Each structure stands twice: as structure tokens, then as C-alpha cells.
Amino acid sequence: MDEITVKQYYNDYIIGCYGKENFVFVKGKGPWLWDINGKKYLDFFPGWAVSGLGHCPTRVVKALTKQLKTLMHVANNYYIDVQALCAKKLIEISFDGKVFFCNSGAEANEAAIKLSRLYGAKTGRYKIISMRNSFHGRTLATVTMTGQEKYSAPFKPLPDGFAYAQFNDMDSLRSCVDEKTVAVIVEPIQGEGGINVADQSYLQSLRDFCNRNDLLLIFDEVQTGMGRTGNWFAFQHYGVQPDIMTLAKTLGGGFPVGAMIAGKNIAELLVPGTHASTFGGNPLACAAAIAVMETIEEEHLCENVSNLSVWFISELKKLQKKFPVIKEVRGIGFMIGMELEVPGKDFVERCRKNGLLLNCTHDTVIRIMPPLGIKKSLLKKGLGIIKKSLKEEFNN
Ligand SMILES: *Cc1c(COP(=O)(O)O)cnc(C)c1O
Image 1: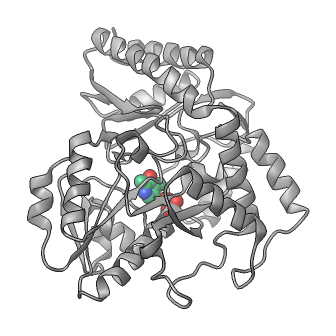
Image 2 (image 1 turned 135 degrees about the horizontal axis):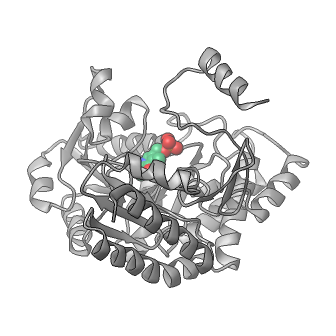
């Protein structure tokens, strides 16, 4: 198929709910992507954090190929060996609990909402507090929980039982809590909301507050999880453990996998008949997730992120000194935001023309999330393109 035909078919046959950039990508390997015209791009925002191991990661491709020829799907009324193994590994790297498998971040958060409501049922509580500028998904419940009116307003009436506090602000949280509140959900680093990093003292206070008031603490680690911050999960960075954690994105290394992990006593509430997902924990999905965990472990990707991110962030901060248009550089590990004084759309476009793919979120924040295993030489190359593009775009 040629580029014109692809775009024509989109125009004619695909619902236009995605803003589109003018590219048809046809091949990927590691940090590289190739478009239909054979042009190669360095990808510092691979698959919106889904391709955290880069494109077509070798072990994941191998594991999937093997699983494809063995067993593609059986339903969850049977035992599935790879699902069992995947869950065991996930628990070993996270916290003592049990896993519910699903296919996306929204679905994982949906499970967390339902589980919270089961937990609150015995005391008549159901309200969940989320943070302003958060992002939790696009289903009706998760988009309501997402603390950004622009995403939910068109779909009113919205489900009941959600309230919103300011991120990093305990006073704001306390003022939202009432006798109906059962849980608090937070991203340790807000992704879509502009790479806003939670303070250590905030997450610690949040944990203490939840303990004192019998509230469940949910961490949405859909974007921060699986090595992104230089630890398996961001909560480990803070030493603050949630009661429930949701995962997706990098978990499948490019294959759709979502998961909710809940502490054992809470997890027991999801008895047969309360929740399900037909594709959840599918053999292919679990084979992919196992391969992702093995890759992160055996290729020491968390170490790579920790080692390189300090240098990389300091290099970006040097650029901030040269280019006053950069308001702030912030983040942990390879979850980095470079906030501009102006909307960042044109800058991202400029980088793209120069061969580097980035993302702009929250209007002014350039989101930089290189694949976890990237080499320093390629980070340097990316930095060079960022610098060149800053010069071109802001005439410095
Ligand atoms: C992407 C994302 C989601 C939604 O995941 P989907 O797979 O698109 O449903 C939820 N929470 C966070 C923090 C995310 O980054």
C-alpha cells in the first residue's frame, strides 16, 4: 500500500477519534522507526510508553512466536500455565498480593474502582478521590476519575462517586474526604498531566492518612511502571507501598496487557461473578509480559535508566540555561518533562523533521521517554537533535 491510499482508507473507513500526525510507520527496531518512505526516526516516545523496551524487542518477539505456535487462547474458566507464571513473577517484583489480568490501563483502573467499591460496601462507602490533571483512561468510569474536565464533560451525566483533589497537596485531599470516601488514586508521576512528580513527603503523608482512615491507596503505575523510573515501579522509588496498583503500557512490551495488583486481603473480595475479562491474561499476553520482565532483569534495564538519566537530565538542564524558552526540566529516570514557556506542538514537529520523535502533553510540556535500554551514544544523538531544533525554532 502507498501512503496516499493508507490515508484515503483512514478517511473513508476509520472513525476519526485520534489526532493524526502525518506519518505512516511501517517498521521498528529498538529505538528506531521507519516510515513508509524509508526515512528513519529516533523514537524517544515509543508507543506512548508501551514500547518501553523499544520496538520489536527480541525476547518478546521470540516468546510470542513460540507461544503462537503452542496455544493462542483459552478462556479464564481454565487454568493457564503462562498466566500462573506471569502472576508469580509480577508479585515477586512488586508486593505481596494477587493479580487480575486485563488488556489495557483503563481496564486495570476500572477493576480498581470495582474492587474499591466492594471494599467499601460493608461500610456504605464508595467515593474515590483522584487528582486534578490526572489521567486514568477513557471508559466512562475512568474518564470520570480522570481529573480533567475536558475529557469527561461531553459525556455527562457521569457516574457518581468521584471527587478531585490537588496533586501534591494534603490539605486539598483532606477537604475532599467525607464519610463516603473509600479510596484515593494517584499517579506517582503524572504523565499525561505534564510529568508532575509527587513529593516524597506527600506520598508518605498520603499513605499514613489512608491507614488512619481505612482508605485504600491506589497507585496508577500504567505509565510509571516496569522500569520507567529506574525501579520496577515508582512506588519503590518512594518506599511507599499502595494497596492496589494498576499496570499496562510497557507491561506487554508492545502486546496489549493490563494488570491490577491488590493486597491479598482486598483481592479476596473479587470472587467468581464479580469481575472478568474475556481476553485478560491470554497466553500470548502473559508470554509477552514474562519476556518483558526477563528482559528488564537480564539486560539490567533499571540500572541503565538510573545510570544514564542523571546525566541525561543534567544535559537537558544545561539546555535550559542556553534557551530561556525552557521553563523547567523535571522527572525521574526516563520519565522526563521539559516544560516550555510556549505551546510545544511546533517544537515537537520541528524535532520530527530533524528525525526525533517526542510528545507534547498538557500544551507546553515536552515528554521525553526513551526506551529503557537505550545507549548513551543514542541519547547524545537525541540531545543533539533537541538542541538543533531549539535553535531553529526559537532563533537562538
Ligand atoms: C495510558 C494511561 C492510562 C490508560 O491506559 P489505556 O491502555 O489507554 O486504557 C491510564 N493511566 C495512566 C497513568 C496512563 O498513562
